[in-house]
Length: 293
Image (cartoon, rainbow, N blue to C red; front, top):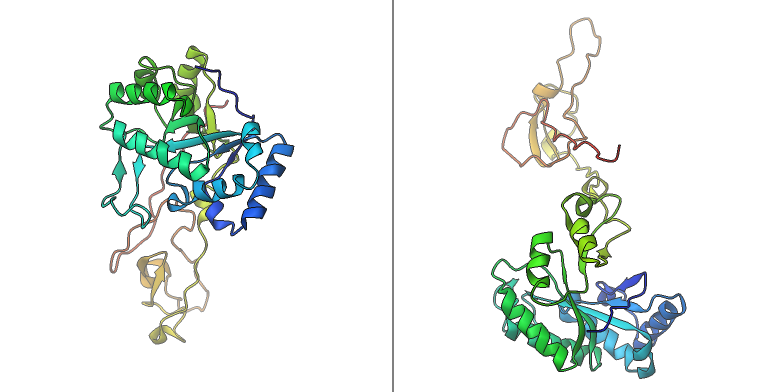
């Protein structure tokens, strides 16, 4: 097989259906990427509800000569329920030879190209037959439809199980300053041992859960209007019904306002809603100690 040659930065096409660009605008985007040295484009058959590859191929058809300047990566192995795939009645993994071949044929059609530079198994399939996958990979390569093969989100052991049957080019995994797992779970160690470079997705970090939370301010119920601050008031706080009497002490006779004890706003997890649950000191999930010392 040929040596894999991708640009240092790969353009991810996952959300292209959300960009609302005309074909000419999509073509301009591809050309701008090439000018910046980003010549590799990462796809998957399921991206955009099975719609992204078609949009990219429509733009590429406006200037077919660009195909020789770029590398196309696609992924398969997941079946989603979609109006574009009426035969998919249940969402599940499928790494059978028949599904891999069908996915490749459809990706070639949608992308309007004769070959893929790299094909990845999107996610580990617990029912994967490694020999069957290796055989269909070999067949697709012999037919000239796929140049190189790899996997995505595989553990070290899963990668090596398939790699011993057919040479794999890479393992695409999540890695960023906020997701360092591949450094400690032997993923990178195993690839380095085989002399294989990983591909990284979301290197600029997906937003962590704490940043995705938004403080929701809810209007008080009509029966609570004008009753703020009174003992016994029932309020809603983050989906949990909190007895106000447990959180706020009654004002003593001398008129001094006591210290208020409120449920912590820095909980690292959502407490499921329970009717009349009293929250005093919600448990906190211990933070893992940093290994970068």
